[in-house]
Image (cartoon, rainbow, N blue to C red; front, side, top):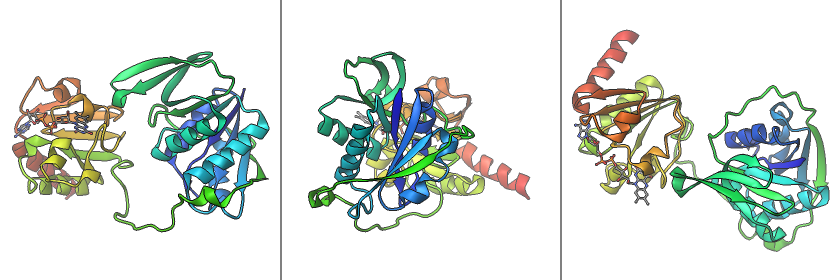
Length: 315
Ligand SMILES: Cc1cc2nc3c(=O)[nH]c(=O)nc-3n(C[C@H](O)[C@H](O)[C@H](O)COP(=O)(O)OP(=O)(O)OC[C@H]3O[C@@H](n4cnc5c(N)ncnc54)[C@H](O)[C@@H]3O)c2cc1C
């Protein structure tokens, strides 16, 4: 099998989900990583450790920051020349966008959010925000797909050669019509998506002000504050803090759910957390019944007590 992986990066910084995609790909065959755009050299370093035998850097003077058309044109030329049997990327916004663009250029179908390739020509993938597993059949000679983020752990130490080659790409000016030109940083440090601990609040918080105690707890334990959609609908928190199907998907070491019922649209956004702790007054709430640990009590009593206990142990 000749397996090509689009390695997503942001000006040289590799997207962690792409390392998951590489880890998956090396179970499929001989892996070529494809890196496109500004910072590709920097992104290419270290990919051998994740299983890339070959690394192709697509080059063209028009290839600057991320642009879906330019990246897809570059990927199409790399995989077309090499006779790839599988082309995959991480199931991120960008990964899905570029593979969909590639599929359009090659007139092939694609499968997004794949969990596993069940048997030849069949993929098992997530649908409906993760609440449905779908088995889909493919009859095409080249399989295009993206891997559901957090469905596999990225593991290094593969010791592949990681031989780097540059491949010049032909690009038309029109491929750069949609391309990032500028950025505004709205937050520094760890993000909700990468935080090792997420302290999340739902309707049970009762007010925007009540989130101050979650901020304090998150600060104490090195985490970030998340929330449910009811909270963003109520205007208590910004939508960027929302966890779930229509928010951010997280997979922290610990997810502390305070006053969140555990509706499926929320659950699919945090179900890959290593440990889930629920604080809820309802012992039958789905979040409580599915959690690893549950405290059936009023969060307005429990959270301040947790803060005091963490401070006491730190003192
Ligand atoms: C298409 C679609 C997409 C959606 N996407 C998302 C999404 O991305 N993310 C998301 O979160 N939701 C999403 N939803 C909404 C989702 O269905 C739920 O409505 C929502 O998650 C419920 O939020 P909640 O748990 O905060 O509120 P509720 O379901 O009302 O639960 C509140 C919980 O707080 C508990 N509680 C109340 N008071 C206290 C207290 N004092 N102490 C402790 N516990 C208390 C209650 O027992 C209850 O379990 C989506 C819905 C649709 C239809």
